Amino acid sequence: MESMHYESPATVAEAVRLLSDAPPGSARVLAGGTDLLVQMRIGRIDPALIVDVKRIPETRGVAVRDGALVIGASLETMTLRRAPDLEKNFPGLAEAAALIGSDQIQGRASLGGNLCNASPAADTVPALIVLGAQAEIAGPEGTRRVPVAEFVTGPGSTVLGRGEFLVSLHVPLPAPRSADAYLRLIPRTEMDIAVVGSAVSVTLDAGGTCTAARVVLGAVAPTAIEVPEAAAALIGSTLDDAALGRAGQAATAACNPINDMRGTVEYRRKVAAVLTRRAAAKAAERAAGRN
Ligand SMILES: Cc1cc2nc3c(=O)[nH]c(=O)nc-3n(C[C@H](O)[C@H](O)[C@H](O)COP(=O)(O)OP(=O)(O)OC[C@H]3O[C@@H](n4cnc5c(N)ncnc54)[C@H](O)[C@@H]3O)c2cc1C
Image (cartoon, rainbow, N blue to C red; front, side):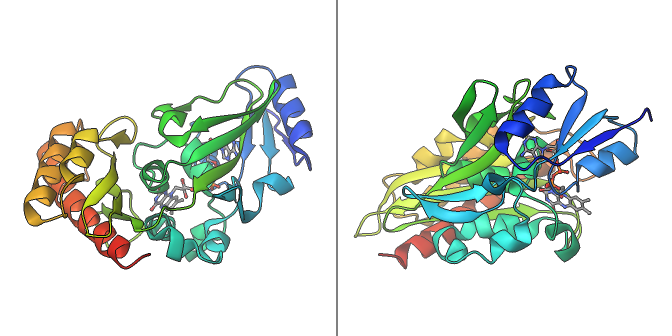
């Protein structure tokens, strides 16, 4: 390792300046470090400059603003999970956040880091996409918003350009009779990476018919994938077994997974159907209990 420089700016502008002034590819943003430090330790990356964004207030809070829950990009999941009404408004996002690592990992790991690390198996990414979350990015040209659905462009790559970093995530508050759910399968009981993850959000009318839905799968393609065919199978139904079955089949058809030590292609396709059916049923049950 060459010499490494560490900075912890207190403002968005200072972080942008540090990242913009660094030679291309030489700087890395640090949030909790639960991915970054592991990658440095195994020699996958060797940054000359680390920009720790945890002192920047805009990356730290969690609050409702302008009809959305605004989550600071570097806020640790343990603190996020204690936010008032997180579980009530976004039970699927809360369950995805609760799945990351262990209590120790969650004392550091952030949602921003989970998204910017751009792993196909990241647990909170499908959960954020089904909620229509937006990413607020700061950079040399000011700030911009990008749907989380478009943020990750491939394994390890994102839309972030030179000098840019993620400031916060904006999750619209749910409409009445709406709810989400996230389920994943791992080979062990905890501390492993998803074989498949499935996030579903649904909105019901007063009679229990589904009027809107989103379905997103993780770990079955280079990025999290939205499955509009699965959503279409749910919309207009009362989330009966036949509709759930069709949504599961659509999830299987949309998968483009790899074979690895956690599961074969065939296994992942089957699991995608099972988890999608179950997550949709769970989201529907939650939505039915809401006004
Ligand atoms: C033991 C263990 C278990 C784990 N279990 C899970 C699991 O079950 N599910 C799961 O999804 N993940 C898991 N992870 C991975 C990791 O904990 C998560 O991805 C975590 O959310 C990363 O957040 P962080 O704040 O630690 O990110 P960091 O490690 O600080 O950063 C991760 C990447 O994102 C970049 N980055 C971070 N913040 C920003 C920002 N604001 N703007 C721009 N770039 C940024 C960094 O430069 C780096 O490339 C596990 C990791 C470990 C070590």
